[in-house]
Length: 625
Image (cartoon, rainbow, N blue to C red; front, side):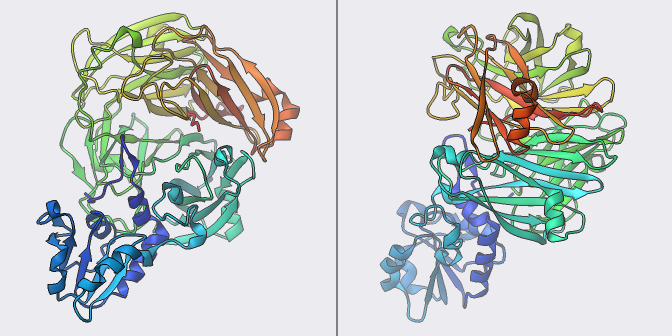
């Protein structure tokens, strides 16, 4: 496992990780390493040496590592025992690397300690170009590393389209652009370019077919690295990613943005049903190769991981058929992916009946433990943590839900499912039990007589059990006539209460309680109609109806029209932009236009997708900003 710190729930993402892992930084560090002479000593003032050498094995192993914190003397650092900085005078190394950025003061401070002939270098020699920095005065500002990856493919009749908006303009950013690098399946660089974003909160679209034509590329399956420059307010690159078929290929699916920080493990990967293939797209997010025997798959709860016996090159993409490592394992079994922190949230692909659909696994938390406060939550928080998901019209679609363990310590899941009609009426509920970690429950909501509306998973401790607030599920939908399917997964939150518990209810902007909504809904293109399924979940009693505005923007971000929408508390609504605004306004907005779902009175949760006349559809959860 890579010895790196990437993300934690209290502090967010580790910007230093992004500074080391950026593809351009990786190239600069490789050049720095090639120029080092003699034995190498390292002064590690910030405790970053382990991550630096783990992500960049081309760096020569240090002969000595120095620290100035007396409490860190003797601790392991990059394979050495840390020495006091005052011992630097006796070093026989030829070069000292000060493992820090913006290090001119440190360099000048320790220069009198250098032995005769020792050279001194710093990580400032591996900085990104100045033109790529949003804040050049502070290199490790999080806004300098607003980056992410996207699965990107244009091959075998399948194309991908990344869609988002310049939401940074809403926070005051004046001139935002994207720096983009496309990696091939081998990890080689296929193309590199920049794209200016509209001056307002306008739409952004990056289509693999257009990129392939622009650069004269062959078919490709790889990953797109995205760096947003000139941003404000947000250091996370959020997007929706469509996979669509061209010509006779009927496939259509949608998935959410990647999580920009690697994790130890990922969960929510389904085993294949009979007649299905499940492909895990393994994409190396770093300049360091992944050694054979590092990655593994395991049936959830079995604790018998099976390793992948092959190396994976830097930035390379590998299509792993899960049946190759776990033959005979079938739905509704679940699979855990142990990634060793080598990649951001991977995608998986289900191939069935000549169609393919893309979805994502989720971060399996290593830092959570059962929280004794959750079973004893005050009644002021009502039903507490809720996980809402759509129930599509049962005469057209089947809706199947599967709870998914999403923390390494989750031994059981004590849960109930509550089903609501669109008008907020509770129409069914069922206690699902105290599910073990290796459960194989997949519940078809037709068994509960569910109408079109939505359902919520909620903790239920009537038989005991533990909870950590990180409740997840996989929701799978299948079109009864065409056989086309889609699936989505997400986690629970506390919704719409004035009282708070450990940062819940979350807010899109500002501190909790999160009692407002800003959701992004893309528009359709060609034969694909855009839709959203908006849910008004409430842990406790809140406003009888939402006060929601649907705001139509054109490609430049200009507002074309607004329409009100009232959703009943614990209810939901299916929104079709072409019906809400009319075809003329939708044409004016264009395919890069979008709808903002805005509510200042409550937090809605939403799912979005596309549908066509052939029974094809896509579905995943919406993102907000």
